[in-house]
Amino acid sequence: MKLGYVTMRGRGRIDLLLADVVDRLEAHGVALAGTVQTNIDRSDRPRCDMDLRLLPDGPVVRISVDRGAHARGCRLDAGVLEQSVLWVSNALDDAEMLVVNKFGKQEAEGKGLTGTIADALERGLPVLVGVNGLNLPAFLEFAGGMAQELAPDAALIVDWCFAILTGIGSKNEFNQLESSMRSAPISSR
Image (cartoon, rainbow, N blue to C red; front, top):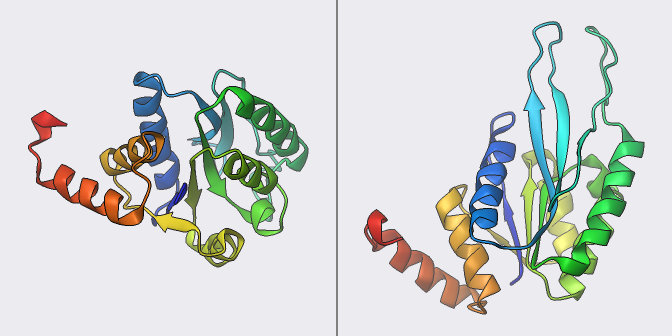
């Protein structure tokens, strides 16, 4: 299974987790395409600004629109998101893996990065996706039984990434690797 996903509760926690995973993978020289989200709290607004770092070495783009302190509803700048999708799609040619910070409302509606995820899988690239509880049913339907849920632990997710990248791809093989990694002393990792 080359499609892994992680889900967890708490605003921004998946973003922090995936940023940690990406940092670790990049430190090991893994060529990535994809997106990592940073949430920037503002003292003058109840909701944060949302920025995307486009992997591998693209710009950081603001995907939220400031609609004022009392505004409600969607704050996503769909135009910027679609430009980001084009960037990421073009980056797949040089990538070993795709990381998608969020399977969100756009993806649940068949837009956003869904085509890029499918393209990466067709190319044989592993894909790691963050999914919130609200969009989990849509993601699971999109994945069609091909996705593996990963524990929300950066070290275990990185282990999964390397297992997939090195060809230890079956669920049983990964479970054996994960079990042996859990029992190994931290210093040997």
